[in-house]
Length: 253
Ligand code: SAM
Image (cartoon, rainbow, N blue to C red; front, side, top):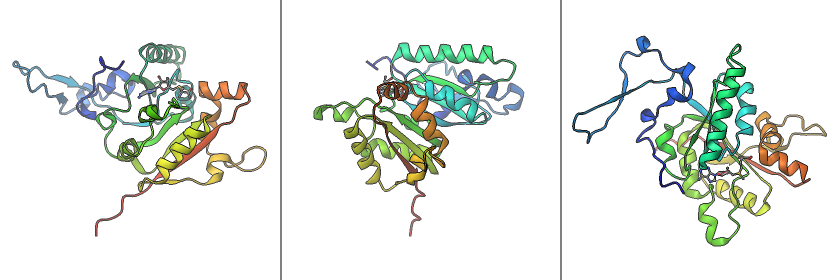
């Protein structure tokens, strides 16, 4: 259950610095600390929230045990990567692994750019991310919710796609992968009919020739480095990939 989850009232109210401490703006650089407004607090206690020197640009939605974020972190050392996961124990596992990898790699500073929070991403995604903040969103092996009456729990729908569109930059990409053909068709259908998205090229998704030359490197990572991707490989299962580019919004006449 997600009843105990709390959400920031806006992206500026998130304590990003505790997730990415080395990217926190130092006190002396921060001319005006951002304040969370506890409007109903009688003593007007306000908590100073440290800003970051850069924003999260890559989000892995339903990140599970974090295989993908740990593979992305060294490949995109200049980008902040966030896993969002609804299960408490799984989120704690990922956070613990982040801590351990940061300690092990203290000399190089690797994995400072990866983090994970507990969240139900079907709710309030725009409270975490500003408009046009993200470069990439990953939806890897989302729960299929096979039964018709459970389809509303799927993390792809026309409404949720509008939220993904809001937080993505024009030109940014949503990556989807699943081993369930019915869910693949569902995700494809919902993104294809959404005016903010267009499907990327076949080469981007599959590459060419025996070695998949030209395949986008993140497609390669989500096929091979997610826990579910590894499981499907072990079972010789099919992986269905579909990626969609965020289009520019049309100009107002
Ligand atoms: N992406 C990982 C992978 O490919 O190995 C995990 C896939 S697992 C089948 C689906 C994950 O999504 C689970 O860890 C589940 O707890 C999480 N999840 C499901 N609904 C969610 C939601 N609304 N918000 C955040 N996480 C969610």
